[in-house]
Length: 163
Image (cartoon, rainbow, N blue to C red):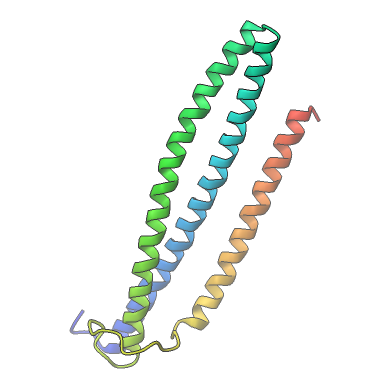
């Protein structure tokens, strides 16, 4: 990379930074989806436990057995989802840090400095214009994901209500 012009290096770094920010958005989306899935599993676990208690109170052995089976399954899923969420949260922190480092290097390079040198002082981001479009796309994707989740929840609720 040392035989490339500073302009070419800046272009490659800009492309890498955009890719990293897209990856960061995907990591955040995966984290948020896992968190929502974990919340749903916890809700289902509470429902199954409540049903098991009600079945115990009326001495319905079959329902008690089924509730215990589903309680075990939901508990196992919750453990896995908690580990997955913790890993995704760590990944988001790591990618955020790497993206910030890449941004600082790009600013130094765009300013004519050595990208390996320590940052002199905060300056405006040269990618701000490109990233505003990226942010708009991310917001749109997030909105679409929320809408799809709401539609899925509504369909599930209708299914449960028998409609």
